[in-house]
Image (cartoon, rainbow, N blue to C red):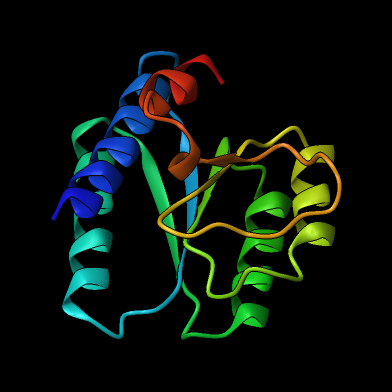
Length: 138
């Protein structure tokens, strides 16, 4: 329960802080829709984005990293303002995250960590109690 509340708070805080600046577009690469929890997470993201006038583009990864990578590349090509990823696996993300970094698009991880060998611009909410504040500062 606390984990769900923490994730919802992170998404809400990040979206609310972004909404203050200008109309934004955010990409969300969801793992899939295999559970009620994932469906609820997606619905909360949609609801919070709508409340704040944010265009939210959601891609269902269908439990496949290759689908998530394609989605992130698509978000980068579209020039979204931020990308949220609920990664299906921990490895293999460096090339696409570098593309997002090169495009100066911040990436936020939801509910799972990933392994990266070099410094890439991303924010993993699980490593900081004050994650909403850090996302606002980002």
